[in-house]
Length: 308
Image (cartoon, rainbow, N blue to C red; front, top):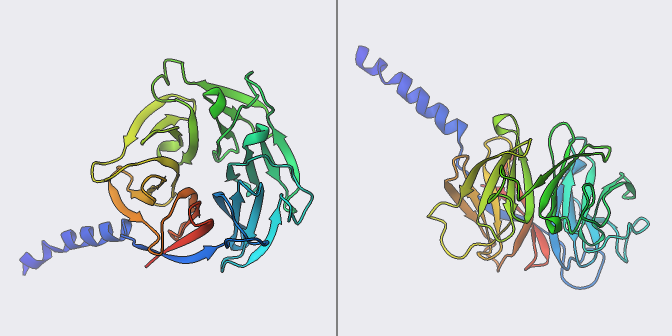
């Protein structure tokens, strides 16, 4: 009678472990945008953001506009460009989107060397940065991330540094690549991502890199996360996102035409591809339900992958 009881704790542990680390598989569920000319046309989608009400914002670098779609892929309106629903904000080759903890939509306006916060109507409400090399100025910024307090971490790529701003635009810190605490781990940063793991950290992707560098929020380097050996073929990482539930990393690999999924330890879990054609993934976002939204430059569209 005692023998079966010895196996009960083992079975419970296995069941809890299976529940805590679910295995997902993804498939394309929705495609956003079309080729050609029209209000829902996408020419060079480079990033996405999921707004309130399941509205998908797609940043089109060539159109210099943000195109908004509902969850089912229907066009809602556009911000910027020739078909703008509001006065044109005057973007110049915008490159990235970011949502603040308050839900405000920010645009990394690459060609204008600035960050722009948009109001609910799409009009600019705040601007940070002008062209320059002095602290507080920007030169070809590539990405933007927030911590829960609302501080902005900016990939100031042209100046080879990361700058930290308060939400009112005050400069708080400058992380320079040549300083000893970062030398060899910060080199022309192009993508940033905040993670709550470990009390708050910042992941950084350097231009041309195949690894992520992790820093604490004071700019001290902590570790390098390299791709595991089972990731085969050429790799060109251009963007990433770490989902907040299980800390899985989703990496856009432009060379491989795929999204690489790693667990919290950096081990490969899966690869996401579009079975209908080649994919050139750029910016992406992952929901708590593990839906993956990604800008696909090859297909001139955005895609939503859902779990099955």
